[in-house]
Amino acid sequence: MLPWMTTLGAGLIVAAITIVSFRMMRWAAEEQRRSYAEVERLNRDLERRLAERTGSLLEANDEIRHLADVIDRNLRTPLTSIMGFTGELEAVRNSVLAHGNGEAEGQSMKAARRDFDEALWFIRSTVAKLDRLIGAILELAQLARREIKTEVVDLDRMAHSLATDLTHRTDRPGIRLSVGKLPSIVSDRIALEQILIHLLDNAAKYLRDDLPGHISISAAETETGMIEIAIADNGRGIAPGDQGAIFDLFRRAGTHTQPGEGVGLGVVRTLVRRLGGTIRVESEVGRGSTFTVALPKTTA
Image (cartoon, rainbow, N blue to C red; front, side, top):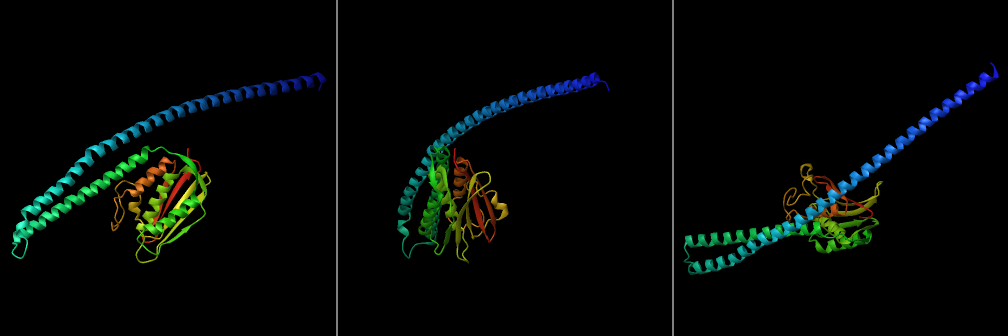
C-alpha cells in the first residue's frame, strides 16, 4: 500500500474518532443539562409541597386550638353545671325521703331511696368520666401545638431515673426492671419523658398475675441513623386483631380490668410523630409486648 494511502486512512480514522468523541461530549452535555433541569424542577416541586405541607400543619394547629377552646367552653361548662345540680338533687332527696327512716319505712320508700341513690351515682360517675375524656382531648391538643425545644438528652440517665420512679408509682410489687446502655440524643426532653413514662406505665399495668413481672428498656442505632428505643414486657400481650387500633384514642385492647380511658398510647404516638419518629408494637398473647420507638438522632 502506498504511503499516502496509509496516511489518508489514518487521518480518516482520527477524523471519525474526533467526530464520535465530539458527539458523545455534546450528548453528555445535553444529558447533564437535562439532569440539572430535572433536579431544579424536583427542588421547586419539593419546595412547593413543603410550603403546602407547612401551611396545612399551621392550619391544622389552628383548628386543634379552636377545637380545644370549643370543647373546653361548650362541654366542660355544662358538665360542671350538671355536677352542681346533683348536689341540689341530693338535698331534695334528703328532704323528701327524710320521713321514712327506721324500721317502719315502707317498701316503696326503700325502693325510692335506692333508685334515687343509683341515679345520682350514675350521673356523677358519667360526668366524671366525660370530664376525664375531655381532659384527655385537651391534653392531646396541647401536645400537638406545643413548641418543640431540642437539647442533648442522656437517654441512659433518663431511663434509669424513670425505671426507679416506676417502682415507687406502681402498686404491683416485685417488678424486675432492666435497663440496657442507651445513647444520648438531641430531642425534646419533656416529650421523651412523657413517651417513656406512658410506655413504662402501660407495661406495668398489663403484666400477668401468675408470674413475676419483667420490663426491659434497650436501644440501638439503625443503619439509617435512627435510634430505636424498645420497651419490652412479659405481660398479657395483645391479640393480633387489636394491635392496629391500640394507638387510637379511647381504644383499649383485651379485657378492661385496669383503670384508664385508652389515651396513653395515643399521647405516645402524637409525641413520637412530633419528634419525627415512628412507633410499632410486636406482641403475642400470654407472652408479652415490645413497643419500639424510632427517633432521629437529631430532631429538626
